[in-house]
Image (cartoon, rainbow, N blue to C red; front, side, top):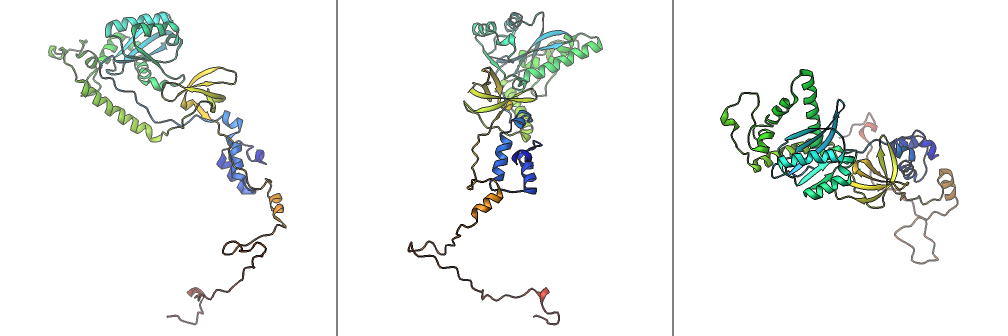
Length: 370
């Protein structure tokens, strides 16, 4: 019967409404919930989880303290992008080869120009997850943090910078103009009246462009870091306010929990191996023994079968009612009997002596009541 109710693989509430329309048995709702929550077909083809509230990155206290990076391809060419979390200053370099050695060489060149950052954020691409890059981070003494696979949102600054550079490249090709001049103008464009431009926040000055500029505007003038941090915090607060309107937190997972993890458009079974040092990031192990790292939004716990069974051993209403036939029905008045051998006296019916008045609409139409 349960399989027929859930034949269309609808949700629990729709299955309950369908069942209530034509039948009933004790514990029916619990049985339907248990079936829907443990249905392999439904678990494998569920929609993605709801988005969780934002966890904003901490705001750096100085330029080039925290740097995001990413690789992207544009018209057959590969590029490496670096972006400063404090100033939003973007550096972009073309890659001859997409190898760890080439990425490390470009990073060394940028670090020689701007300094070594305290924190370097990237995805889990082979260029960044290799042993050589790990040795590079140890040698240059910076902390390398990686985002969860298929979760670029945790490195959103670099992802947004990639979109900006792609747009500049595309428009430069259409206009047949110099891409580097377009990038120079972007770096000198103020974010707002308080923050100034990326060049001002990184270098403390405007850089000279083809746009005529007074000499005094090119002089060194630092923007106070406290002012920059305050403005960036306001921006983060506004962004979180609108994003979190339709977001809700997901429950945390523990080691050994049975889960389904998202693999494209389907969900596959796995087990939580451990939680990583990063927020909402877990190491999972599949039945085949393969280890993966996934964000919490890509994991769905499998409900445990802890549904209480009904008191009757029968799931069928007719059998349940039949089992009740012939059993004595006791009615206890004012507690239990004082003596065990004494049978309780049957309840006495009495007629209520309370005076009642019929509604006026039922009164004699020829009789007026005052």
